[in-house]
Image (cartoon, rainbow, N blue to C red; front, top):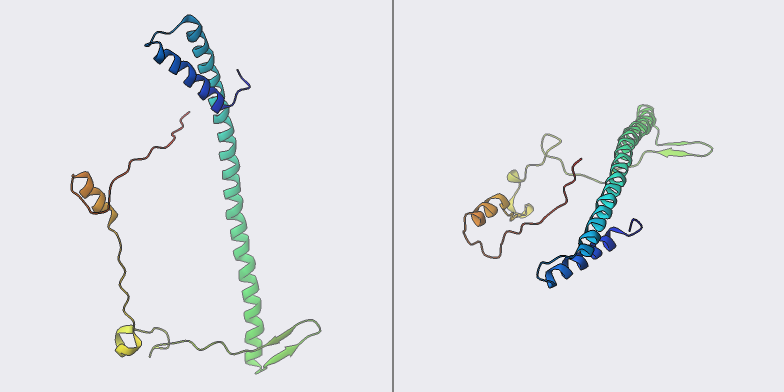
Length: 172
């Protein structure tokens, strides 16, 4: 019995339960013994699943911690690269150099694509532009909390209904 999968144990219990139902609720000593044995296997298998789950959660937590460490390291390396590039750029601008040719690398100043800026040199306010240069966008968004509350209160909301799902809760 201990080598059975969780699915097989569940199937075995289902067979026993159906046999008892078919017999009008009468359970034989043999069925009772098999039920107890199968329930014991289910409890043992469930505990095994619980231990595997705890191990997976520990691995998951360690991986998340490592991701945070690597993200921080990536940010530091990226900042160092950007600072290095800025130093090269600043020297070239200060010395009015358009190009520096090394043996392996060539650094050159290039123009960026043009970008829009407002009168202050930064922000563009669409309300201050002529209508021909502005596009109005309407966004429809469900007010889910309000819809849920209306349905809970017995109101009808066309095309909507509440669905209550289930989930597994594990405690130790």
